[in-house]
Length: 378
Image (cartoon, rainbow, N blue to C red; front, side, top):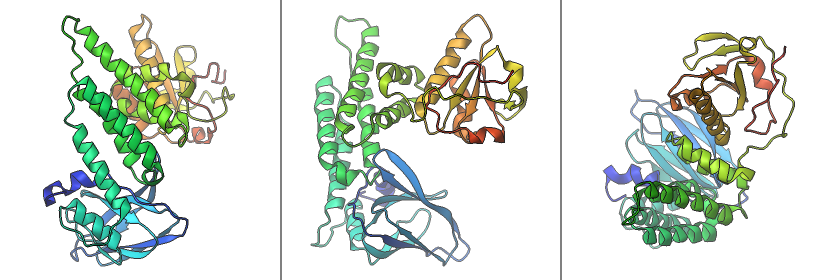
């Protein structure tokens, strides 16, 4: 970040730090005005996985000590405020929360001070921190990728991304940079002009899809030594599902079907009570599960399993395009979250309903996607 206005944009794009075994601790200290409290969330990373280390309120003038075995880059987000990186290393240090829009400051953390000077365009001291420097290198790579326009430029930049992540994965894995680099990698495909003189317009879309499919295959090759293939594919699929590009997400599932799952027991027997409550996406009661036996497809879905959501939405679209009034009944694996309910927004025809019943919370260890036939009690 060169200026205060640009700080947040860069901070959320790239961060990383090293990994050690020793426990670490840091203190969140509120230096806000006496009448200003804030809710804080601290996220940590392992490859493509994101987890919440801490979430909760931080009252003005108070401290929160967090001890963790995680060492790497955490993202600290303030409710109705900015997102900031914090490098968690060995030893204890203090993160001073100076406001929702103000940069944090640090006590006993020269590494974070060095990092923030680089991000804000200030000149750091003579001491060097390799993890911070690596992230500046990643920042430049992200910026450079925004200017590509030709297929050849795309090819060259994609290879740079592959080499960078592969060579530095041990440092990058405990940051959100693996996720962000892959997300930007696929965004690059949309900067490129795929038109070839003399070819029909349909060829542009076909060439774009082909490039995306090849990109997923390349990431599977690069990352499989470090990350399970189904996690890689689920993340790539999620990038398109979140943008409502369900057809392309389904194409990825179909192309790499051997990796298109979330772990669990395949074909596990599931029996669902017929009196489970069924609601629409707004929570309005629509009866019980037994009312739909023979007239709907049951789908088990998890908010943590993008391929299960993609395949369910795709099947709902197929049913909606048919002559019969087919419906999908979604049975959540775990809680019925807003992320699962939001599947309805992917559909033109409202032909999806949801089971909302505490008895479903016990469904687990099921390999997804799963459309169990005959699962409803007669």
